[in-house]
Length: 563
Image (cartoon, rainbow, N blue to C red; front, side, top):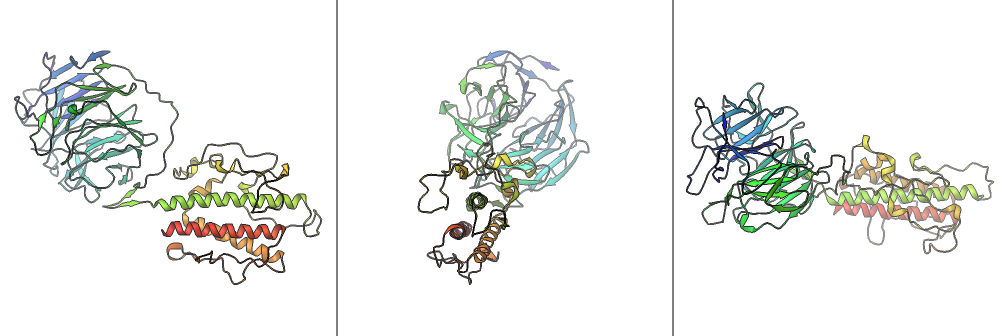
């Protein structure tokens, strides 16, 4: 049923295309703005198993249709989905309305009953969840929502779509094997928020895609394809109503969600509505149109473009092979993007950057308080206090058990702690939460003096800052505020019990209610901070310093949350 052609395909745009197993590139239909005519039903495959070839002589193969197939002559702005077993591809022809299955091994076609709710509009893209076989078609259900097609039952049902996704066209839509989600980019009309969102087929939720680096701007009619087992995502070309067709290439490292931009391509080779493919190290671009605002679209140059992902250079030679290393170390996630958040039915719920800073400050305070408490306990152990012998009872400081450590066994070094990553609780371990900013803390003299941290130090009093427990990273800002309040109250009670003239104002109430906005009493010059009536020495002075420090940090965290 297939025949070798001595002629390459006619250069077109808005064709349907896909790649199967990175071995075969399929391209069908499209529209031409040149002398070849407005539309064509050409069907070609590109053999990506050949060891090497150049852009001057790519291994195209023309395919023919059986006479029994009643194929409509004008097919363009349509889409192809691939079955999970890679044995069949399905053509989604929204206008005038047709669904066709093509079996690769037998080169046979089957017409599928068209769902009655199928949107009669072009420039939509269908994509398969390989885990379930369900096909997702944004904007494809009655021009209202995303359609979900079940090949087993031939049912077509609507799925959740946020506001603004109605009548979306000209977008790019791919499955991410690494994120187990569908990634959506660009559309018409162009939005002013994050151009990338992802859809979880498991939870039926849309979420803003977190990323950093050289994030691509909004464009329409771009092509987006995964590479290197889904660890890379390549986005090429496209245009906007005010900008001509672009030749820019952006690459997302999906493991750490960092974008980078590729340069070096002649701007005249930019294009829109083209076809793209990946095979190993090779990213391939073919066809498309040249869009200029206010002008007439033209066919893009017919010469194929190839970018070598491994060498990072545009080339005219395809060389089969890959340098992907599946066991390469994960670069790790970046800080959470300020636009990251759940998209419900029409809203993006963004996280406030102030919360992240407040949580970081609270974690640092807890670690520093742990140092003060442990140093005081060592003083109590090595030196008689208040005239009592070392064997008499001393009240045990209330600290988290997992924060205790031995002077003879300091905690082992660990990688820096990123409070924004927030891994799942079951994946955490205490070693990953050491705070490196305290590892180089200087030794202090017995009887800490806040005015100086220099002088001879007792080697036995070198502070060891233990790792923070895994539970802390999962606390909410309210929980951190409550912890600070409890720390203040506990030390005030100890201060009152140890001195006939307590260094605090008895009228001060440290139990701050967690009301609206989590407000705590504060004002200029430290209003709400315990009042010191005497300088004190030894333990009382140290407790007062801890109280003052904790209250100041509580006020700082509160200010962050209120700003």
